[in-house]
View 1 (cartoon, helix red, strand yellow):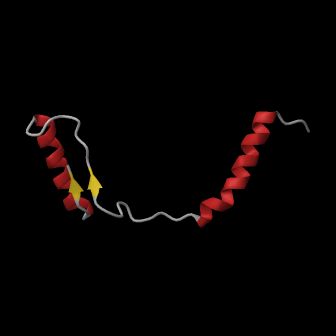
View 2: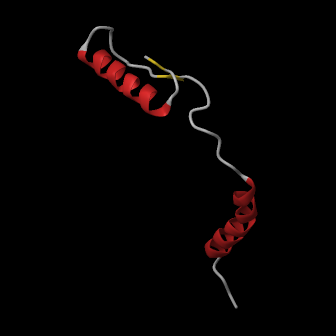
View 3: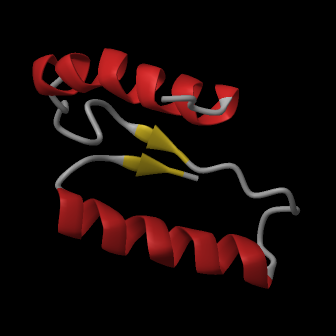
Length: 67
């Protein structure tokens, strides 16, 4: 049986990473306060929108969001 090199490497990497997937476990997101960076000046419409979104995310996720 002759397997092309790319297919062999794909199968080998999938086989090697499969056991690690069971070991890994996700942490609670977000684990600490989140900082949102707005690339525009304060007081503009983008800043106001980011602050409103941060407030809703804080209420929904229960973590602090900073703009």
